Image 1 (cartoon, rainbow, N blue to C red):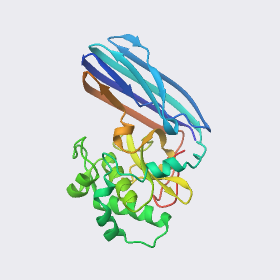
Image 2 (image 1 turned 180 degrees about the vertical axis):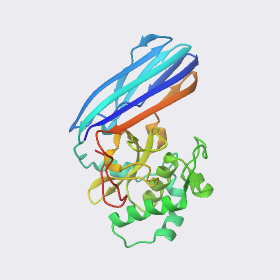
Image 3 (image 1 turned 60 degrees about the vertical axis):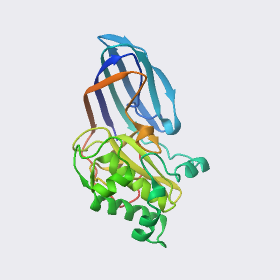
Image 4 (image 1 turned 90 degrees about the vertical axis):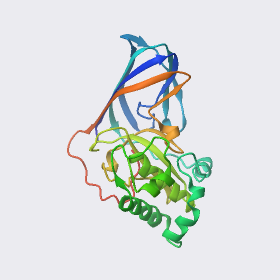
Amino acid sequence: MQRDVSARLEVAVTAPATLEFQIAVARQPGLEVAESLVFELDGRVVTAREILGPHGTRIHQFTVGPGHLRAYYRATVLGAALPEPPADYDRALYLRPSRFAESDKLLGFAAAEFGSGATDVQLAARVAEWVGRRIRYVAGSSDPIDGAVETLLSGTGVCRDFAHLVVALLRALKVPARVVSVYAPGCAPMDFHAVAEAWVDGAWRVLDATGLAPRATLVRIATGRDASDVAFLDNHGGEIVVHGVRVTASVDGPLPFDDNVRAVSVR
């Protein structure tokens, strides 16, 4: 499958800042990626330093003064990423509560709602399906500092909120789970997308409670505990205003059907 993705961001920098972008496709064995990434401040090219993170994540970091910053990314992705080797550390880390996936606050609720005795495959699918029914997708309905508990109480959210709630509930049920930012062909509204991954039957399987895009088409960008690890832009020490984000993602041919039930990995 050929997948073509792009991102363009317009950012006003009003005070000197160190910026970190996570918009490049993750570097994974099995993928052939032809890409270009350009940063410009007031029309002048800015050189970024690439920082390699876990699961192929790439951070592009640089420091700039005030001005109008543009970020352009484009990639053609061929092939399928090879399955990630199992890591005991990951399975331990992704069982812990985190800033936006407060599984420790949902232990009793998760046990009462989902019980016990199901296989991991059944449990992960049931949790994702439950979140998809319980939460309504409403653009702009949540605050960037909202976590899984706020999403459960409000009953509305966007993709990151769905992912946080799925992850928090699974961790509360002793299933390792994490958040992945992706390019998502077929997603509507088109944007950077967030999904959950759960350790199921010896592999990381993707769960998308929103059902907004076929899971087989997803392209991994960053992987982490929650949105604090996978944010497309982070700012240290300065002041910025994001004026525009435009994301595209498509496949060469028709979008595949996704029943959102069978086990699928991000490839």
